[in-house]
Length: 359
Image (cartoon, rainbow, N blue to C red; front, side, top):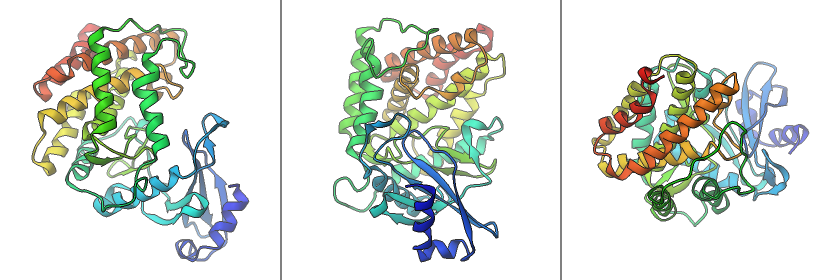
């Protein structure tokens, strides 16, 4: 859909006219993520909303990489479900337009991506833990297969987390000149295979599927979780592990920039928020979180969608240090995940690599 298409679509939707107070409006493309296009619709009186549209291809890689448009239907259904169980943590969805592969939602103009903020307070991490607890405690109403998850996107997650990064010189990977992966042990490979089995077969909770600091927005007090296109039914530790990996990427950026690191307080706050609502942090959940964290840390070093905190480092020597450190930490966490005995044990393993005294 073009800007003109969006304008005509909005004009035909009475519910969106109410949001815009029936004023004249303009439509702007404001970019998007790896998969979809994002448009802002803003009225002359300042009211606005966001339209998210899925083209028949993966936006990041272009028209040659075809991808089913139905993917956005699963996302809008998942966001609507999240709105019922965690309304303060997601933008309001005004309209689901399955027939045009788009949906309209609240414009978060006062919010910024968490990965672009250096001042995220600890209560935000607690709220992220609270959101995970809500996923843990609630179950969506039964629907037909594919209503909440898209098989094509789950396959992409499977391939780019558990398969391609572990195949030497796979053509889907993007290698950087300052990083050469180390040989991996049979134990590492076996644990990745176990994590993959859990990802594919443990249909326990409806997850966000790509929960990281680039899919969480904050205004410093509140948070909003966006971009649920990779939603799927799986083990809760997957969402937790991916999120923790990206918290650690921010910390690795700070570490390699000779800045203070705060991962202990941030990760503790996340689990504190989870436990406050769920009343438990099971050892199985913690161990899976650690394992999936390691898998996410490792794959971001090799896939096209790199970790933005590492890419933001200003020079090659810092990037080389960050990549090597990320790989070492990833291997440690994957290989040790099934032997972690407590949150303190996990944090101690991280500290061995991110202790300021080891710089």
